[in-house]
Length: 400
Image (cartoon, rainbow, N blue to C red; front, side):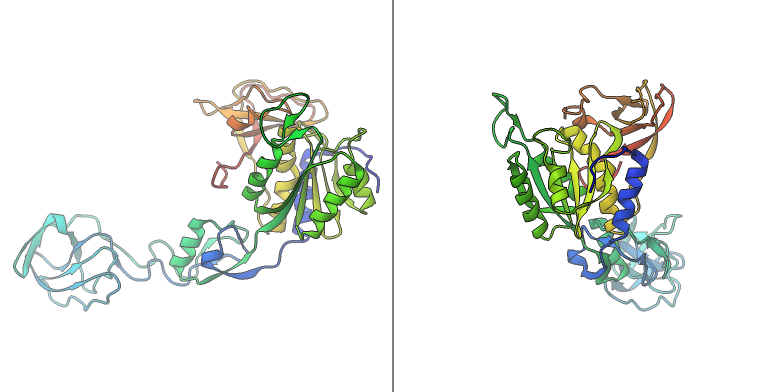
């Protein structure tokens, strides 16, 4: 395989990574609700019954019929089935969440009522104090499309709909290889050696994109033999994706390309016309994908959102990663024939402003960023321009 060639346009590279993932999307399984968090819906979530399935009291109080005063004829709590109110002037004590009896004309809040023996009085509010069947959703209604990531909120919704299992695609498994003799794994940088910032950080990024790092090696020596050994171990681990950091150039200690050639790899994308982030790659060794991330930390994150995120989305049957649109508050320069992914934050006026400390080797700006503003090749972003934004995932994995 050749590792030379023209850099691929950023948008085209992202689409190619997504298509490669879609082509090998994981097979769905039936997973119990208690273990479904982190999976991806393989079919739409539809209601198995009306939500709610029966009229449900919103408050503690009295289900009444007709005008006051009302004679108390019973009580109903959540989980019970009450008899109908068949006469005016009657009431049933009712708890929040309990089924409202047939014949009820109002529910009076307990704090807005007065009881005297077996009689109760009060003034019902104008608004209805119970939820009607189907108020949230009708039976058979689609609530979420297939490809939706399963979160605790989705699990709760599925349970409320009556599901015991979900048809879903499981999370993906990843391996991480960190290349570089210059890296330290503890303590402050000194004497020509720098602290490894990607080994601790990449697993968190991958987790937010739907993959869990189960195998990690590094720092790996800067020799071809060590690279080959580490790659073979990672592939043998059964990982769906192997991420490497560093070694994507063609310098004297960059051994990733020769190692891939020795392993018979096939490139999906080889080098993307984007700054920062140059160069990055996506290849396949047998059935295993391999993403080569640059060694500079911010460049590595650009590679993650450019190639890895769309690949994993496709493999899980999710929608392609979306961009939003933002208005620039300050100019952002272009990068010639390359797409410029510029770190931005939101100002109080809601506009996007470029961050300082945004060099490819820096992390300070990244830690404060809302995402990357996309400045297309051969263009410049001016204040007031609307441009795409690649949002960064929040702590819970959701997008802003």
